[in-house]
Length: 399
View (cartoon, rainbow, N blue to C red):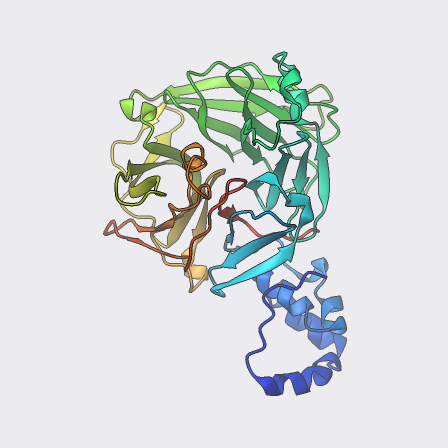
């Protein structure tokens, strides 16, 4: 049993546990159906046996809005820690399937990659259910580089840096996984359930891919030279995997080539937004410092015209953006008192630079206020890792 966020505030509550267990099951079930936050629902099921019975997947609205959890930096053990913004607490859960692996989160799941073997899986972190994927070696074989998949004497080899799901595997078997990796250059490939291997996407970009997103039935990417691509991947009804690619826009701006800028795609109310993150390298102040973010800009990308709208967005209204290494998502902050509106909650995304520092990446985190440009801390501590730095995970249940 995974015990998460079970809070006993007063000693006398312990004496009433037996009474809780004796409540009519219909009443307990009705209470369970009123719980809308997954972390509270998990805690509800940890109270006792009868409450755990009521906390079944049938009694939870899997489509209800959730707040991302901060998965803290990986340590050298079989546990992972998750920080809850709402509870202001860290929960440590047994997750050996993620041990020593890079974890790329997408719609509540983790795409895990084992450094020593190249084994890849989709992992649901709160049920520990795994979906086996073709290996990293299979990706490299497209380019005649599979010989690189060998024991590397303890050194970490970071080949795959993006992994995006089109849908939550908890809710449907009709989904696609798109990955970006380096195989002698910047490469893309996808996998669908029942596919025996990866399918390579023949697309040429100048340098790597900054970010990818699934939006309005298609995958999109932005490259280091400002190219915006769309990928229309065949669904499961078509046995032979295929993809149609389109170059939607070529954004002419030198900022796409700057090492101190990162880009993210995010959907808000049907609009596709490009979030630009600006940082500066601290020199001489902190020997362990890397890039520190100081400003964000939000632009709306007009897919039809292949360019940005003239005016940058000055406000997100009641929404807030959560962004990190593998993507970004929007949350309606009016639904959650603990989430401030018009904020960008960001985690450290200067991965290749941070891995050269003592302890690894994870130092550049904070909440950026779009209105006044101030940055505040949202996590009371420091979490760094050479394996997998802190990032956001959207909690979900297996249905």
